[in-house]
Image 1 (cartoon, one colour):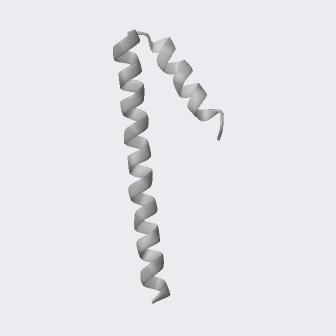
Image 2: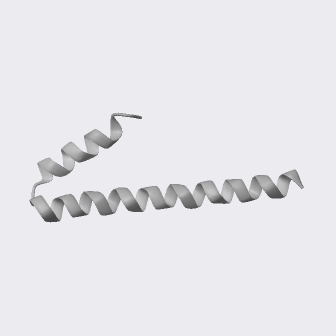
Length: 52
């Protein structure tokens, strides 16, 4: 029973992580499309890394 619950939790974590990565890629693409600047994309990427 515990093994089944752990598998569900593990699968949910993987799906959540994939969603986070898609969100990051979409945000960086949006910033590039709005500004046309690679520097702006770099700043945004740097700001997202700071908390980690």
